Image (cartoon, rainbow, N blue to C red):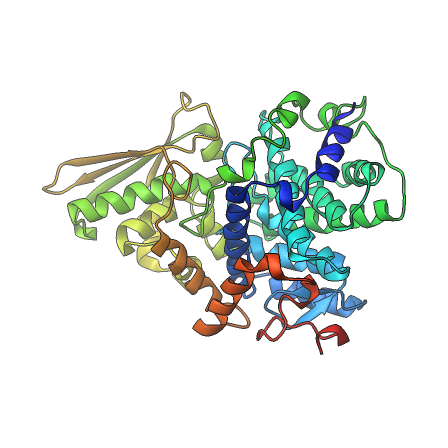
Length: 460
C-alpha cells in the first residue's frame, strides 16, 4: 500500500472510543492552550488585517473567528484562527518533529466541525488524528534543509483532520492527502527576515488542508503516491522515511510528546531563557553585576535566532526570534512574557542596549536540531563566572510545566486580545473543553461567550 493508503486506513478505523484516555486528556490540554494563545494573539500585527480581509470577501457564516465575535466560511476561519494562534509564538511544539501541529490542525478541525453537525467526541478524534499525521511526517523528514516543517507537513495534518470531520472513506482520505500535496509550501526565509508571513505560513496550511478535504468530499481525485511517488513529496521537497511515519501507528501517539511553551518565543530561545532565569534567581543578579554574557547554541538554532537584534522593522517578531533579546529580558527583567514581546518593550532602550552586548557562540558539535540545548555563560563583578546548560526545555515531557504555570498562562492569554474574557468566562471556556464528550454539535461550542458567538441563526 502507499503511505496515503496506510494513513487513510488508520484514520478511517480510529474513533474516539479507541483512543487512549491519556491521549484524549493531552489533546484537551493542547486545545485549551491553543485557544488561549490565539485569543491573546488577535491583537498582534497582521491578525486584524486578515480578519478584515476575509470580512470584505464575504461568504456564508460557517465557522467562528475566535475572539472577533463574528464568523466566516470554514476556509477563511481556519486561516484567520491559524494566524492568531501562531502570532505570539506561544503555541505548543513537537521538538523531534520540529512542528507546531496544533496551530494547524485545531483551526482546520474546528472550522469544519462548525460547518457540519459534528459531536465533541468526533471533533476530538479528528484533532488527535490530524496531529498524529502531522507529527509523524515531521519525524520521518529530518534533513532540516530550510523548509518550514509546520506548514509543509501541516497541510497534510489539516487535510487528515478535515477528512475525519467530514467522515470521508478510504478513497476520500487518500484524495484529501493527495490534494494537499499541491499545497505544500513554507520556508524559513520568512523567519530569518522577521516578516509577518512567518505567523501566516502555518495558517496557509490550515486553510489549504480544509480546502483539500472539501474537494475530496466532492470526490475530486488526487495522487495516491503523494509521498513516495516519482514526483511526490519525498522526491521534490525533502527525502524522508515512510516507515518512520507508520512505525507504531495507533499504538504510540506522538501528541504525548508535545511541548507546552513556557515563553512566547521561538523554541530555539527557551533553553537560554531558562538558564538566564535560573542564574538570575540563584545568584540574585542585578544589571550592575553583569560584565559579559555569552550564549552557546547549535548551528540550526543560530540560523533562526542569532541574527543581530533589530526591532526597527517588526519589533514583536524580532523579539520572538532573537536569543540576544530573550537573554537580555530574562536577565534584566526576570521574565519573558507576553508583555515583553510587545513593541514598546521590544524597543526598550536599556534592554536593546544590553541585547546588543550578548555574544552568541555557535558550536558545530551540537548537531541534533531537536535537542534545542543551550549554555549560558555570565561574567560578573564579585560573583565569578556563572555557567548554566539547559538541555530539557520547560514544558516538555521530561520537564513538564507546573500546574500553576499552565493556569497562569491560560489566565494571562484569555484576559488579552480583542475580546478579553473575564475570569468567569475563562473558567466557562475551560469547563466546555473538559466536557467536550457531551457536546452534540460543535457549532454551539462558543454559544453565549463574549467575543466568540457566531452570528448565524443556529446560535440565535
